Amino acid sequence: MHPAYSVILFTTASGAGYGLLVWLGVLSAFGVLPADRWLGFTGLAISLGLITVGLLASTFHLGHPERAWRAFSQWRSSWLSREGVAAVATYVPAGLLGIGWVFLERTDGVFALMGLLAAALALVTVYCTGMIYASLRTIRQWNQPLVPWIYIALALATGGLLMLALMYLFGTTRPWFSILTAALVGVALFLKQRYWATIDSEKKTWTIGDATGLGKHGQVRVLDFPHTQANFVMREMGFAVARNHAEKLRGYVRLLAFLVPGALCLITLAPSALLGTLAALLAVVAAGVGVAMERWLFFAEAEHVSMLYYGRPAA
Amino acid sequence: MTCLPTHTERKLGLVIDLDTCVGCHGCATSCKEWNTGGYSAPLSDTDPYGADPDGAWLNRIHGYEVGDGADSRTVHFPRSCLHCETPDCVTVCPTGASFKRAEDGIVLVDPDLCIGCKLCSWACAYGAREYDPSHGVMKKCTLCVDRIYNEHLAPEDRVPACVRACPTGARHFGDLGDPDSDVSKLVAERGGFDLLGAFGYKPVNKYLPPRERRDARTVATDKTPQKQKIAAPTTAIESLFSWVDRALSR
Image (cartoon, rainbow over all chains, first blue to last red; front, side):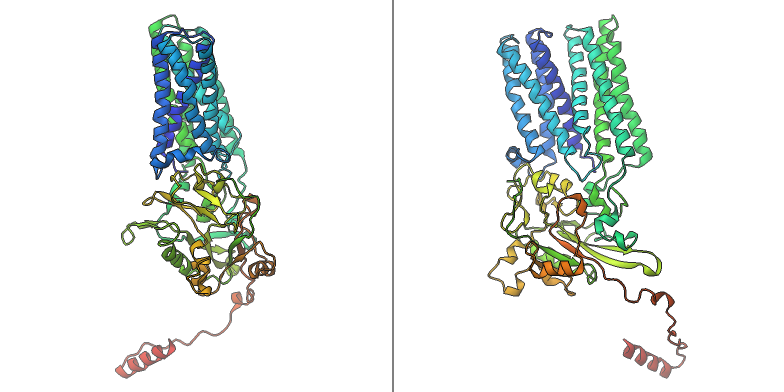
């Protein structure tokens, strides 16, 4: 599948934004984070800023962005519509949490409830994002039960790294949160490794013979494409990253999205606050680049069944 | 509404005969001509006469070679929306632009509701939906919904443009939900099949397989004498006779 840069930006940015919102909501509700106006403002501004930038970016690839509001209507059948509904709904408790935290300096009572509700809706939104891909039976590499859970794990991990950096910047560090974030990065890596192992070992189900129905008459080979130039379907679905490049890129993803941020999380446990802050900030940058690469690869490694008509032997 | 109808009164669709299709692309050209002024007009092209022409087409004709050696054959393969009974292209649509009609089973995109997110094209297993960047919406076969019920047209023209155009009668249109219809009988008689049947979208359109070659064994051992080769003409009169011979042999 052709990697759409707006979609990569959207899922990376808003994934981290929703992850951060989960941690802000949960940690403030349980009193781990102080009801400090500036921490609340900075945290929610970064979180909702990333979410909003992501949502706006996701409309860039639309043919008619001005009609985007129509996408809230078909939640009964469409995961994309459900994602839109959940994304917008999340703003309501997040905004109410913001009012309590920033203006009233309170994160208890009803505001704690809003924090937990915002966290829950953020998770639902990320799950919907994952299901947009996981529900497509036409793309074997996406139609995997692990896919939405990887989206959630990466959102919690990248959001956790942002939360950790904020904790260091505001001097409200908790050693256990460094360990928890490192553990989340580890869980995300484990799921991603499982995912790669699955898509590599799974047998391809469909052949050019099934697609054309001509398989019983013998080997099917492409003689002529319908037109001399590539068309929309070939450009959109035909993108495939070469096997050796994929292996190399997976290595970079392992390093930047998982191993480096995970190690930096543990470095934040060092007694120096300056070192801790630098490590936490560096972890955010590495994970941002790493997850964007992971998303690019998620598209580039995906093979669409319709490409069988254009000569791909199996999908 | 992007939920699928539980039942459609009719299942209008095409039956495409892979035995008689000669790959002339007449159906695709006729489709393009009708639909660039039809239900979801325009069907835009960019750089149509330039070095890198591009455009949305609702019907594309592939050429395949099937089998090996003396038994191999060329199969021309028109491919368009199959108006599936349970397609995901409809249910994934976030706006309700993509829908399947309960009355006749035709799958359509409402060009006034489509936001151009392209998700439906990702959900189609057959690559049948094509995005029109100039119009910003998704295009697909309409089964010429603006022809088949059009009382302003002569009765023989109330069929999809591709069916009307086909010079070899390789395309048939009718109700595949009615077992007594001509198309259903044709499918039963010729062993019509689904594309990617096991995939589960339940396509309505059917394809008829190429017939067995009657001379499959004789072609490989063709011993008929070759036509005698005549030496190149050397005089003017020989050239004239040679020209007459060529002209008459045409």
